[in-house]
Length: 260
Image 1 (cartoon, rainbow, N blue to C red):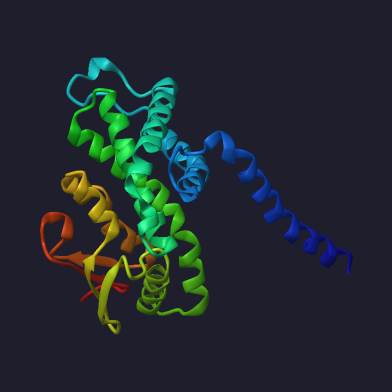
Image 2 (tube, one colour):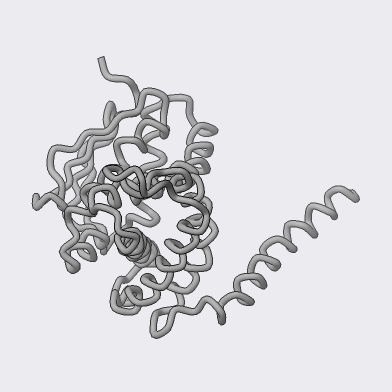
């Protein structure tokens, strides 16, 4: 009885403490002239971005051609992060995410703003554009890899079949954050492969408005290939057409099992 009471108290205390911490940080982290969600994204993702940056950037060359410039140290990383959030504060209010009807769509677009802000911060260090794109993609993946852990654990608890596990996770993502009406998707098959055609993606529209389709193609659009590999044993992903490449559709195929 005592153990149950302790768990009950802890169960109440954790969300209350979390809410208190977030509310306490809102004034100092507030994004001027932006919807409140932009501030909460900033508070929630600051530690994640810092953790990812320390693992991806530290020790990497500042210039892949001129190696005499040395490598990223903690001072360099701190400066990049400071400039990233400064850029985010400038970009977020201009995005007008309040026009999007769902929280998931707004959330995703603000993550697009965040990666754009990071891209700008790394360019300001003086890095070559292709190298900056690679670093942003690596930073995204480090965070993405952690994010998939919870839905993967849930899927594995409910079924042993890899394709069904893949389908369950994808269906979760289609409820949040890749949900309509901002995200326009048709599911064409779910048996031996999960096939979906995507005709509209709010994050793509954001990058298109900034003429950054190539950046999205080489960052956001690359994550799915590696993501499929960690979603299930033997998982893989195919795509012949991509919105960011100028096509009319992203024709996605998700395989949960190794193909013969």
